Length: 155
Image (cartoon, rainbow, N blue to C red; front, side, top):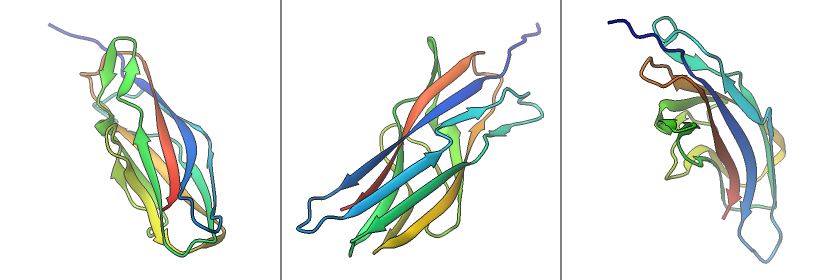
């Protein structure tokens, strides 16, 4: 018996968020992402077991901050295509420069640290994040989507 399936194409939409405490003096946090949509191309899992998307540029700035800051990522759920899903933990990332950036695996339940530090980041700093998805013939054919929230916070 021969089974033929088409590999997936997954699209992650990125959204930037800023979180800051309410200190007596105002902190200033800035976060931008480019591009805001990440696409994994359809590939043969036998020859391309890990599919990398084009990198996204993460630009951030932290001002008037004497404490720690964190840039985290959280998926809104698994990759979805109609009734089919692919567990989000199949999506990992590599990030530079290290530090402050670190590599990791997406989660839909717990925000994962993408970068962290303390004090101010001024002028603006930039990092690069490349998402990768584990490719498999067990995935149903389809175009899968999900939203990933990037949050810069200075508690």
